Amino acid sequence: MKINLISDTVTKPTPGMLEAMINAEVGDDVFKDDPAVNALEEKIANLFGKEAALFFPSGTMANQTAIKVHTQPGDQLITDKDAHIFNYEGGGVSFNSGVSCKLINGKNGQFTAEDVMQNINPPDFYHSPLSTLVSLENTANRGGGACWNFDEIVKIRKVCDENKLGLHLDGARLWNALVAKNETPEQYGRVFDSISVCLSKGLGCPVGSVLTGSKAFMEKALRVRKVLGGGMRQAGYLAAAGIYALDNHVDRLAEDHRKAKELAGVLEEASFIEAIDPVETNIVIFYLKNSVNISLFMETLHKNNISIINMGQGKLRMVTHLDYTQAMHEKVLEVLQKIKF
Image (cartoon, rainbow, N blue to C red; front, side, top):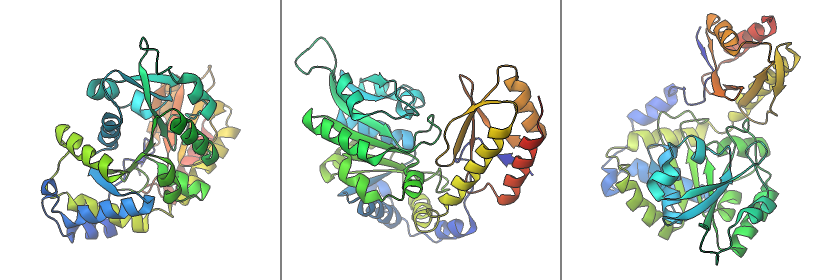
């Protein structure tokens, strides 16, 4: 039994999802003539109370498109030092948009409205880049799947309004945050100018993310997606998976959260652990004691058919997901309890 806790992107479609994909009514989405894609986009837009949405092959492309629409070359966006758009999107902010990042030294991937205020460049000081966009990530990946405080997001929105800044949400794992915090998509739609959500992480789809915003914003996004090569033809087979997942896989995220917290509970008792980031959703980030060799620890897990990821800087990560069964979970708990260094 191989157990893959590297990411929640490793899942395969469930039988119900496969059936929905096979039976999808499709067309050519480049001509906006794919019924399944149109239905998915309408469903997401309605969930968030937005005017329009657009299906993308990846969350990275969705985020990069949003940044391109929000900014002009030479501008600067404000985000956390651990943000996905800065660390894991291949330098796309600068490559695609000619934009630099002002990085906030936040906590667990999050920052405050006051932090934003302190990092806005004076708009009349032409020697520094013009601050035009703030980007948040919820949940925060490198922050251990931490969920933002919605009240703080509202305060950040106020700062953005007062300083004429756009506000984008990288909501790759927003579904996890909504379940963990008992929040609604509509709440987020009211606050953010643009939101990207991923279907291929917690929801278990094979491919796909969706960007949503105003009609005018999404018309510009459609052109940028074309430039980036994101137009797909009979994409409805993938969109059908997204519709199925939204209808069937959201509530079950609570099960992933439970398992992650149980993993953290066992790690807290282990003699080889130095620290564990707080666990709110499906990500467990932990650190070994200096006396424990990381490679040897990883090898021990591999011998037990357990795969996790080394994020660098001493961060080790486990991510629970749709394909991580209770039997697998019990095996991992047992192995962790037996490891001695």
